[in-house]
Length: 129
Image 1 (cartoon, helix red, strand yellow):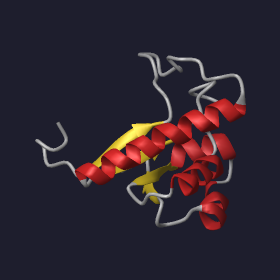
Image 2 (cartoon, rainbow, N blue to C red):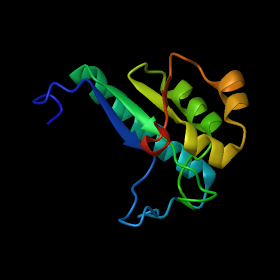
Image 3 (cartoon, helix red, strand yellow):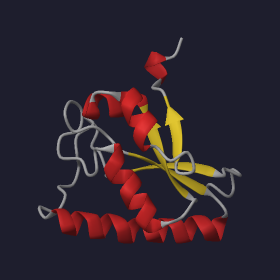
Image 4 (cartoon, rainbow, N blue to C red):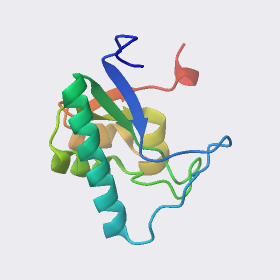
């Protein structure tokens, strides 16, 4: 579909949500299992992105307010995972609301942790004038 629409950039999430915005599938109880699964999945996504010459933007979601139990809620964890995947065709969507809600100080997160090669910044539509 993306090829037919000539869409070069696509957005993906670190998990599936139900109609209420809650986690649709429980994540593995062991952090190592979650990490390995996410790594393998994103490596496959990177291969697809390379093959089809697109970029996937990965949005992580907060667990403190809106999406309890969601995988990889912290920007630092997502960036570490993306460094392991090592593809500039899979990037982080640094969504201001999600970061502020989960980590509290979005300015500090951006200043100290975000690699501009792996990030795309986003502000929720409800915050825009």
